Each structure stands twice: as structure tokens, then as C-alpha cells.
Image (cartoon, rainbow, N blue to C red; front, side, top):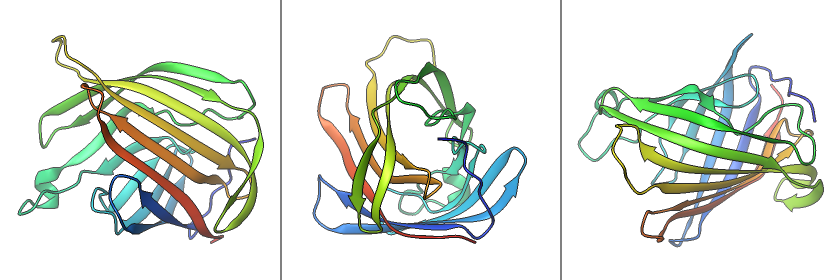
Length: 202
């Protein structure tokens, strides 16, 4: 699967299931800018653990920056922005079965003086066809696993992120995304599944 061609106005709407608490949420992503080196989206979510606002990606859908979630009584400016270097490496196009990439990505929030290192491995699985509310899609699943530690030079226990992004060329994005976060003591801190409900070209 080749790198997607994205246009301003492209919109994806997802139903988000939180497996740790009852109730469903909805997330909408709309492209507001496309430049040679980036895609800018306006993201709106009704999920309690999600931050709405502008998300900036590379042209390969790898996250560069997003707003942080503001706590109660905290302004968006106080919460700051999460910025990745070089980027959050979900995808490496062209996607082919068995392809793998690995490395370290640094994420920083200057407003909160926080800096974390993601040491990751991503692998493309076997092609398959899956059903989501928007219909049936041929996908390549990308499994992304990362150990996450504060980047301050001290030995610490790591959090673990496991994500499976079911990328569909017909939707120019994933149509299903499974996200799990495991705490250093082995407890499940997050378990969500997002499924595509609607995709509209701009």
C-alpha cells in the first residue's frame, strides 16, 4: 500500500469503545491543511481521555504534534502541546506484509517540562478483510509496540504501549485502531477500539 493522497476537507468519523468503562464515544478527524511535509487535522472527540484540537502529522500519517489534555481548572495553554521528534512512527510507506521498523522517538511538552522516550518496534501483519460500521475493507494491520520512559537519565520502570492500526488504502487511513496501555506494575491502564463509521472525501 502506497502513501495516501490527502486533501483538505477529507473527514473520518469513528466510534470509540472503551473496554475499561461503559459507554461509547465518537471521534471526528477533518483535514484543514495539506502541505508538502505535513497534514493538519482538526480533531473532535467526546471521549473523556482525549484532547480535541489541531493535530499535525507527516504526509505518512505519523504524528508530529497534538494538544495535551487540560485538567479540570487548567487552561489549554497551561496544558501545552505534545511534540514528537522525529515523529510518532505508526506507518512507513509503502506498507507490505512483514515490513518492520524500529527506533526511538522523543515526545516533549515544554509547558509541563515533560520529556519521554518511546523505544518502539512496528511490524506489518498479513493482509485481511475486516468489517467496521462503514463497511468491509481490505487492510494491512500494523502492530506498534513501545516501552515508554521519562527521558531524564534515571533508571525507571517503563509503561508499555501496544497499538494495532488496520490501515485501508480505500479509506486513506486506518479503519480500526486498537490501543492498549499497560502500567509498570502490569495493570491495564487503557484499552480502546476505534472503528470507522464514515469517510468523506473533501
